[in-house]
Image 1: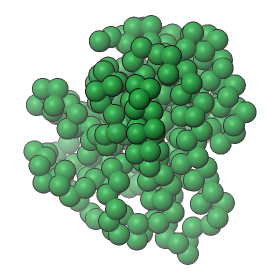
Image 2: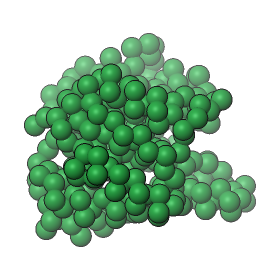
Image 3: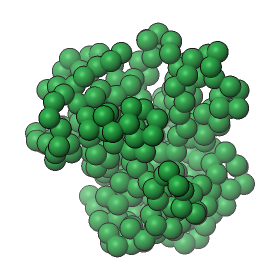
Length: 288
């Protein structure tokens, strides 16, 4: 199944994993709405909605850049309406936008707490809510949340309870909505990486160049997302997918292209359950 002429609505897709997913879909000739907050170049972060749109069109797709803060109900409604007006509908909703701060309870100010919950949990709920009426009309509708498995272990909460609560809120959207909209044929799944992914968050917040050198490129998440959203929606919903496992199930055995310069074990990502590591053939460095 090709994504040619299918329409993807991607939150926070001006850079990183969201942009990588957009470019992978664009290679099929997909339509992509980039709904993100960055319209002007940022001194520390690459990409804007406009540069992302240019890349999408160069890759073979059609792009609609929309300045959108997913915390704002009116802006999300407008972005969805503009998408439907421009492309005729929505086939795939990718909830990629996320806010992060890895601090303990006493070190987390409430402004940052609110930001993480408004972007991660509320934003995922809101974007999904606005897209679902249009997804119900699509031939093969998918919602894909970039959110972790619900591995309810204290170790994931103890050092950064506010962030984990907010991120697991996205996962609970997957759990609940997959059952709620199963009869409508709308697939709702989560996707999460086995290893760290080399993004601005890694380079600026989560270890810098040293961890980036132990990370895979965002292309692995893009290829895994592409594989998921091409599957028949009625046959694949309510899953918490891990990127490498998705691709191995599709026959990929060589993952070296995703980390061509790595010289040792890759850094494991947060929130990956122990049993996933136990069955994985990839050597990772775990610090939790």
